[in-house]
Amino acid sequence: MTLFRAAILNPIDIKSWQFLLDGGLLIEDGRVRAMGHFNDLVKHYPWEPVTLDGVILPGFADIHIHWVQHAVRGRYAQALLPWLATHIWPEEARYVDAALARDRAETFYADCLTAGTVMGMSYSSPHPEAAHIAHAARRGDWITGNVVMTANAPADLVAASVKPPADLASLSETIGRAHYAVTPRFAINCTVDDLAHLGAFACQEGLAVQTHLAESAAEVQEVKRLFPQALDYTDVYDAAGLLGPRTVLGHCLHLSPREWSCLKGRGCWIAHCPSSNEALDSGRFDLDCARLHGIPFALASDVGAGPSHSMLHVMQRFRHQHRAVGVRVDPEEILFRATIAGARAMGRGAVAGNLGPGKRGDFVLMPRSARLQSPQSWFEDLLDGSPAELEQRPLGTWIAGHPVFGGARPALAEPLAPC
Image 1: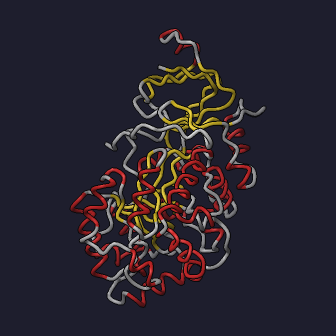
Image 2: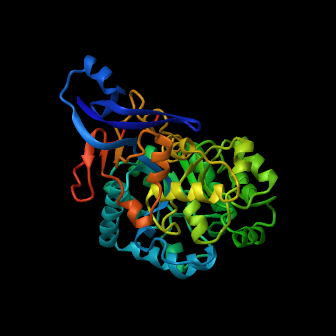
Image 3: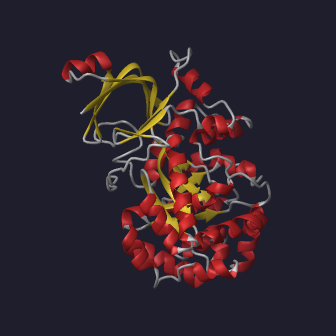
């Protein structure tokens, strides 16, 4: 057992959190045994504490990030479709090189841990070996999928892509069902038959599904041209059997009322990517509509369109974009969307997301301030700063109660399987 002593801010739901100015966090065998006021806790567990000068938060979850775009994050300000063709697809083609992929994967996970991200859902390039490399190198709890691109893409990426359904079984089996997601890049890059094969395979194997939906107006129009038989963009995925409670859809910016109702009916999750939406000028997520329909969503960086892998920066842009148009976003909800909501979207809600008893002891230490007596004020201040400043703001990150740092890279135990 390890007993940590520090201030603790633990999210509960979108409206509440628990704040302990002098808190205790007891970790046993990688899981939270108990949490409470330090003086109360130490009476029952009289261990010498590890005293940390800062504020403990649960580790962050990023449910939509392209690890193969990490090296070119936020570099280009173009509309989605030309940005992909001009910059992103040539970059991803480089991941045919296994040595490059290994080096980039190590950097990606180290940078995520330094920024306080301990779990997430990542998109790999089309190359199966790159997905294997990402899985083997992971530090923390990650679900990864190699993007399927069988149409309307450069020939080298189409050639590298798995051909559903024949190539999917061995890949998902090797990586493991708990860590693999069926990942059509987006409807434009797949045929009707391929999407149907992907949907059937995901359903048969009980796998997570991740893809993009209605990120830009031009994308929606192109889908309408390519799939004239569909009612709308969402119907393309629905007809293929790709929508369900284990589906995480990135962006969802340009949806009709029928599409919102469909997502609600299927129980899908949305990955809200405010910093990416802003960078590519794709539009603003309709937060009021998502709330009205009761559709679950969590925050995500969408690196590389997002300029930073820091979830602090993502939370900052979430706050700014919606408050700027008069939509209320409270600090409690902001933290919830970057922690508990992300864990639930991944199917990890029972084992991660906050510091409740029995959950993994994954947490990040943030600096204290004079405004700590008011956790809302302290948290608002925590989100201020440039992307570079926010990436370096955490003082330390722990997984299963063990410290992990960008330069230390200790081996990590296998994450707990989802419930």
